[in-house]
Image 1 (cartoon, rainbow, N blue to C red):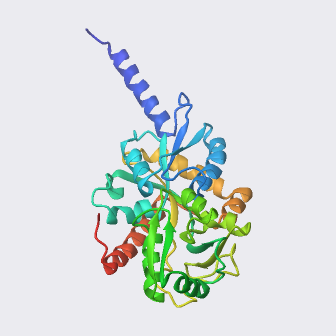
Image 2 (cartoon, rainbow, N blue to C red; image 1 turned 135 degrees about the vertical axis):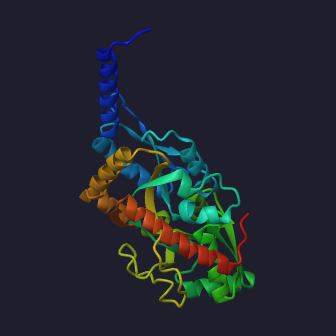
Image 3 (cartoon, rainbow, N blue to C red; image 1 turned 120 degrees about the horizontal axis):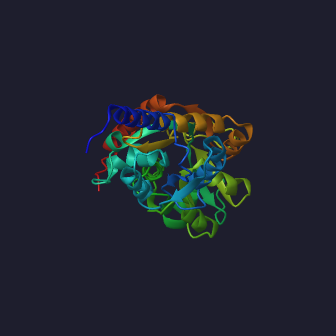
Length: 327
């Protein structure tokens, strides 16, 4: 079969035009939806954050954005799904520090390597973790909690955490050591089931993110008694930090970011990053996220990569010092 020079040139031009369309973002033929993976079940803090953003992102991108909950193993299943996804800009992963910076250090075979399998898209907020009491306890402060555990169980107690080998689980051990308590973490498959047990007084205490607790704290159903971080939270001005109580070393702020599969074209990353920047700058979105206990602040892909690396280094030291062995 013979091709004329004109046909060859035409084919090359067609290819160049198609490449230009793809380089500019999603081609018009793509109608979505964009999948926003979340590693925790519906009803938790991360899920609520993802749905708040997805509702606005669809307008910026001109196509549907759906939250795809792949709950389990502290976000591990969602991370594996992102690794397996095509790098076409249609699958993204909204995650906090646990799955990206901590989980690969505490699981021998997580099934993904953030440095090789993901590319940062953008970050949009930081947050802090907190210690909260269920409504069935009389506890209103950390000191009261320590006294209560000693009176109820001779210094032994259980504390819910949203995922195994997570920041909250390590914090349970640190709290127990500081106050001379034998506290055992009880890992859940996300914050929603942990919160359900706290609301049902099935477990007296829990450690999780402020976004996990804030709504029920404001409703008087649980009580947040201390937060991490270097300063009190605007949404919880009367709640002291652990640093104020003499428990330092947890001042670094965990982060929320969005990631894409490795190999995703920069044009797609930039397209989504720009859309996210516009969304988190919207007054109603910022107000909503702030009310959830987040400190909203957009950072681009390079800044997110830098934050991820720094936070990973912090937890490398903390995990090593704890003596924890990857499982």
